[in-house]
Length: 112
Image (cartoon, rainbow, N blue to C red; front, side, top):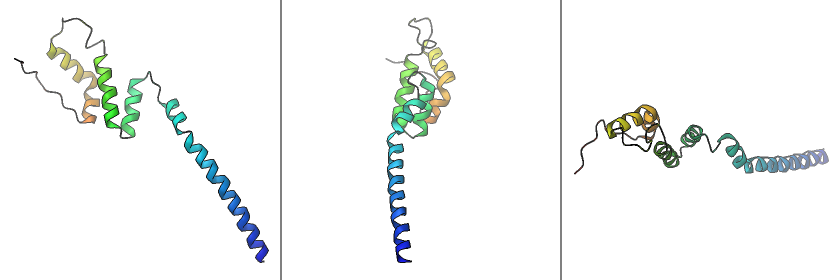
């Protein structure tokens, strides 16, 4: 009976060791999984992913970069007033800014 318990313990130990290395191998593949899930080109997906893992500073940087490169708002011309641009930013990115805790002013104050 004692030999049977030793045999079962050895088998259990070997299987536990195999399971440990399998889990370790899966954990090292997380970077590959993350790169697969978050495409670099899809800014909205990247922002949502960063928010879901509570990386608010990186999500803020992604959002601000996207706002500044948005052709609908900043088309290089000065035809639109700053108030119009602010309104468009609120319209397009309002929910994302709100989720980051960023509040834009209702009206721009004139600067001296």
